[in-house]
Image 1: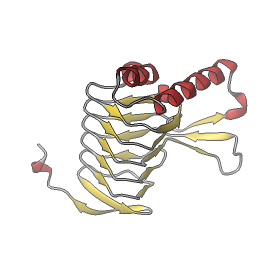
Image 2: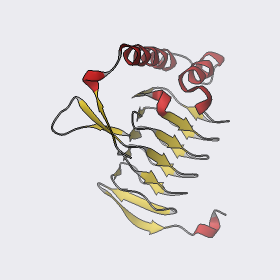
Image 3: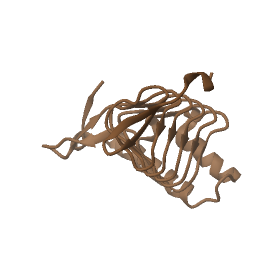
Image 4: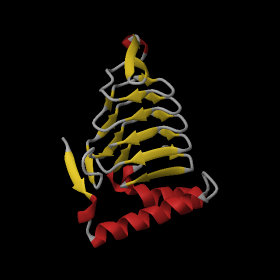
Length: 179
């Protein structure tokens, strides 16, 4: 499901909300991790869309945090970029290493003020390696592994290991070892 967003047509309310989120992210990035203040800021940023026992390590960057849903027992390491205008859903027990980019929106190649937005889905138990980038519209399958530095442009099957730029399947994991 592709959505086009013309940045020139953002309402005053949308701009104010984006500013509030940027302020929360700034405070979060300048607060001691795992402190009461830090956890309160995470809750303010993500509301009920942050699952039980899930954590995000600062610093983080991104936009449209109200378009992110994070399941239970998710760990997102530091320096993550979460561009969520198209929507990002992370299911339970997912791990993201440091410097991962989830980019659910990208600029139109002919009109840079227009964003092409497609949702990203990271399914249960997936692991995303350091420095990997997941591009708009991609689903990373259940218990899949995305290798460090991979650029993922197409869906990753369940239990697959992908590496490279663009990412390609190099191995399929034994499903029975997970169930």
